[in-house]
Image (cartoon, rainbow, N blue to C red; front, side, top):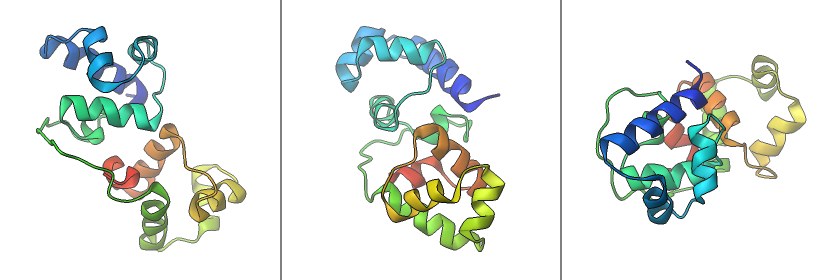
Length: 144
């Protein structure tokens, strides 16, 4: 199942299981109500909004996006480092060249270099693909 679709379904389930309305989630997370409805209909959230939602539900992003199937309470997450640092570590630990990673992922070397050098931060959909590619935690890549 597509990870964004999984997020949408998981979000629906979490709202029902915790008896929380979209308005309550919006208030607790600071994410606009219309954005939450977008996510429920299958649109990809911005990274910072996904993190806010995970914080409300006290869970890992990996759970919300289907990298893990077991829900565990994980409160008190803070961003411990920036995404650039974690991305750079994942690239260096992979043992692959940036050229090879760009080819494997179907992205340009310029895009990959921009992420590596911190000129741009990957969007959530790219972070999901990177977590799959590097076989690492989505939470790790965002610095949680």
